[in-house]
Image 1 (cartoon, rainbow, N blue to C red):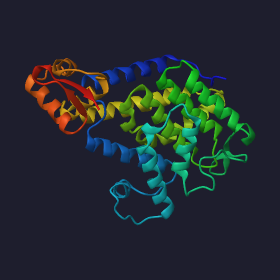
Image 2: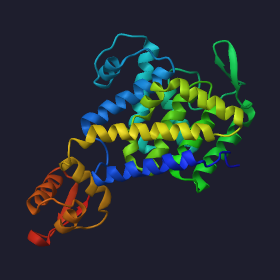
Image 3: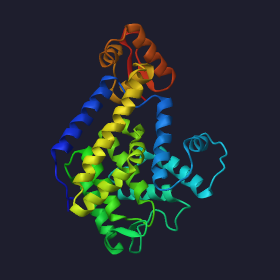
Image 4: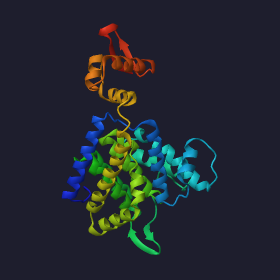
Length: 318
């Protein structure tokens, strides 16, 4: 069964705004943020997603762990960060529509933290806020079937990829397929699904925006639970995605278009043999000399191979 939700004017509005921002990324040749910003955003992502779950390590401590520097802190919190680093580093290796990959991601994310990471829960669970039960998850016996249905939806349904990610995120929070780690898995896989729309989402820290609006995040989950559909949560998450994407664009826009952006754009866009003119058409406004320098650097870096010589030289991605 397809998860229930309705398309609203707000959903359509935010979807259009997100597509417009992705168009601006394309015009800036922004395939992914520059290296420094990629690292900063990854740190924000890991810090925020774990902080929502009660991890006490701060940005500086997480940065130190990424840099392989010794950190003093609760061993559980340190292990959570190390697991999250590995899981997010492997995002582009996971098949977004594979239930087996989803379970593998949970095994990586919760390894050493729970008894049987990568397996569905075997008992009934509820979500507590303080001492009050806010949500009772479906019985554990139906979890395998519900998850098969949910991944069937990802694979076969014609919903827009950006909306599918929001629907999936909500359904993981509602279903609670694991004993622990459901929130961080919902956020991790949401990012993976957004990458199907555009690879730049690998380095857009939507988790940071969720943390900053954590109260509203849980409020929208509760509203959707009560309504029996994910509409309110989709509206909220599209706003979160728009906000995060807008902030990343603002941080990168001032830096201009450099070799890294031009070359990444070319390596993603030019699939077969091409020449210098093709490279210049793709990167409008650059000079012949700049194009030649770029192609030479890509050859020396081993990212391209060439055939022919002089003006007849052709290039291809290795």
